[in-house]
Image 1: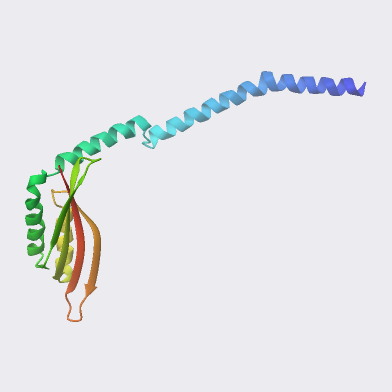
Image 2 (image 1 turned 120 degrees about the horizontal axis):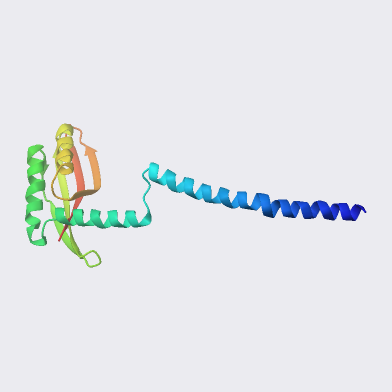
Length: 161
């Protein structure tokens, strides 16, 4: 008799699970997925397709800003002008270029030793930041001399088409 009661309770539990709890669980999972999608939309989350399309657009915007490879002297003139505006002394700058086959771009690297006052250094970097050219400061070393001016060594990279 006890075995029949236990079996009956087990059967009721199984029926209760399949007819009442399982559908609610599936509905709950669907609601959680919907909630996640709504949060992405509200939070400005992007789908993978949207991220891909934005990346393509960003690359095109980047390439529009690039100078032609033949115009690399404009970069030298621009950086030289920045240093003159900032009253920095530029001596023995080094220049090199390399073709990046996978990106179909040229990198133009300028190694710039500069000497000047702190305010002039700040102005120089402000001009680099505001430049219409794509200029990336890859490396920077600043040393203060005993008599006051700063000695900078920096590597600036630009990209050319």
